[in-house]
Image (cartoon, rainbow, N blue to C red; front, side):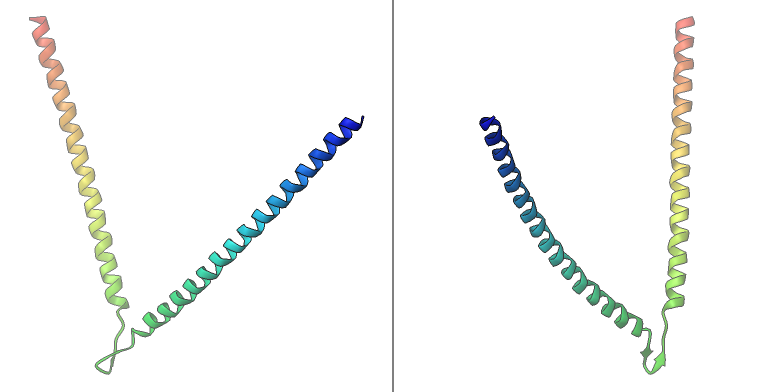
Length: 118
């Protein structure tokens, strides 16, 4: 009975140490996460100020108000149309390539069958 109590006390002590280790690791991870969050907060504030600067840039050029929104929309549309044309063209090329393969395989199988029947 004394041996069993000693064994259980040993297990209890091991569990206490393990619990303390886990608590310490959790505390370390909290500190690391807090540092990461503060870095991201600084980065976010820098990006927000940069966005504000860029939004103000649509201001003046030679004392005339300028906005590049219409140009950006136009270039966006051009890029979209070119991407659509490119994807259509690559799709057609793939289709032509597959058609050539099927024709080649059909003619070679016809040629083989005509050779074997002769």
